[in-house]
Image 1 (cartoon, rainbow, N blue to C red):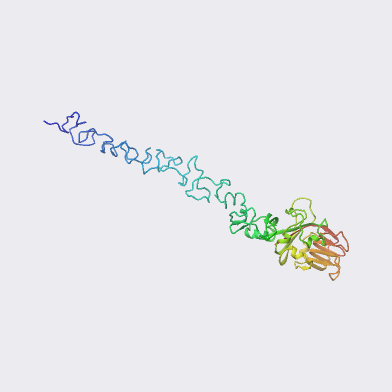
Image 2: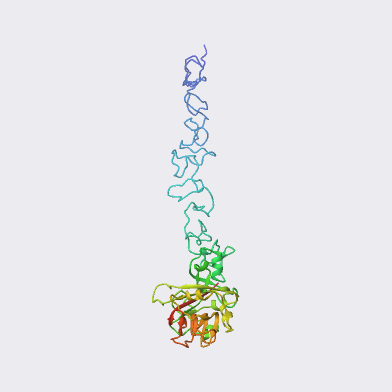
Length: 407
């Protein structure tokens, strides 16, 4: 009788087993060969059997289906497989390699990951937090490492508002030099009082210069042009500084008690003048000014207004001038106010003149800046209040510190 598979007899060298049946999956296959993982047949507890020992395809060498988390990288399907469910290491739970932009912050590698490739937010496209020293434009910066919360941008760099720029002025999204404090305030309504760089004649012969800007009084935008001390004779009415274009202490740009006349006197156009007086003159601290605005109409500059030595009236009224100095005094007649006013032996460059007589021929009182004369009593005050010969609040010879702004 011939031996055959299934006769329960194992033929040496031919059969590996013979369990007397033709059933696969019981350890001895229907071909009388011992069943094992890798024999190309799915049997027993096997999930798959592709007949090879490779671990990078759909069926592992353990005859298990390849899945993410099995520590074997399925070629073409998985990028990595570290066998854990930790999202912050080099291999995600999706078996994708961690990378910047996957919205997962990788430990020790990423500082942030917002899932986009934009630097213009609070996470760069290198998954780093933006800084003011990383040599790229990121975060809220308007240019590389400047603008917003970073240092102010230099001339010509990108900006969105004046506070982004060292000059305090942003024009057409570039840091530029403003023609006046008013231009700075218009471009940035939040601009604060302080020293700014301006260039009133643009490409003209006068170079840009620093100047103090009052960004608060009456809406702000005022450019400082002159500071005068009424205890000194520097700015008496007859001083040539009132009618020439010479400068005085032009580097003393702070709003302080140092007398000065700036390039802005010669170059800044305006429609209003703002004068401020401090009286008594204090020895320290910030200037304590009382101010008045004087509408003038369009003027090319203070130099253009003052140099002709021609009286230009104003109409702010006697009470406004008197309010510049506490307990001021003024004769009740004449009340000649404005610029380059004269009345007999009394004169004022910016102020008001009074007389006890019903005319403007022999005034003995004044309040203002650039005053001269004291026909009825003194001493005269270049800045402040002189009042003698029956004024309305007693005799006065009060010095003040004065400032002149234009807008």
